[in-house]
Length: 178
Ligand SMILES: Cc1cc2nc3c(=O)[nH]c(=O)nc-3n(C[C@H](O)[C@H](O)[C@H](O)COP(=O)(O)OP(=O)(O)OC[C@H]3O[C@@H](n4cnc5c(N)ncnc54)[C@H](O)[C@@H]3O)c2cc1C
Image (cartoon, rainbow, N blue to C red):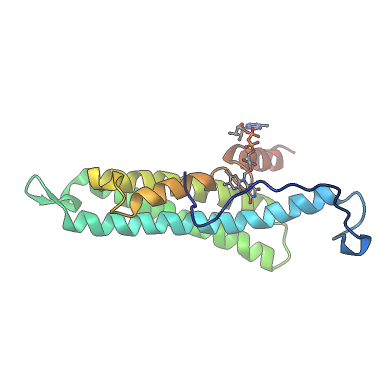
């Protein structure tokens, strides 16, 4: 569907032996290492989602100043203004969540929950913003001449990889309820 710049293939390991000196940690700690890697990666995916959301917002804003419908630029219609206001607000909230998680990681603080919050919120903001950006572009939003259709396709994977949105909510709710 999207992220066409990042190729995905199946890989096969047949009779592969990895020497002990290449092991990245103690025997039996593989799951823990995998989870730690994912937790850090989530901040990166949150930042990727934030970039997609910001790009979609900027394109929608520019288009709304240029496109005229019913005698005025569409930015003068309140329905469009409210979409732009919500986009800007959600993007700002995503940015702050991303920065908090990254700051905690840099400062040696447990960032499991903040990383999940940044990831779930930013990825849902990216999907929503890109979809609304397509809407603001009308029919042009749906065709390839304009970039927003690509952003909408690219946004979707950020809700799925490095832990789905449901998995992030499991992580967050576990920490609330423990
Ligand atoms: C192109 C591409 C690249 C990818 N790259 C990476 C990568 O680099 N790193 C990475 O981590 N992942 C990556 N993924 C994602 C990964 O491959 C899986 O798709 C992802 O972890 C979800 O697992 P699944 O597809 O088996 O879905 P399933 O586990 O089958 O889940 C299906 C649905 O059920 C929900 N669900 C499952 N369990 C629960 C539960 N306990 N409670 C509530 N809901 C639940 C899921 O959230 C999802 O909505 C990539 C995916 C694609 C398509």
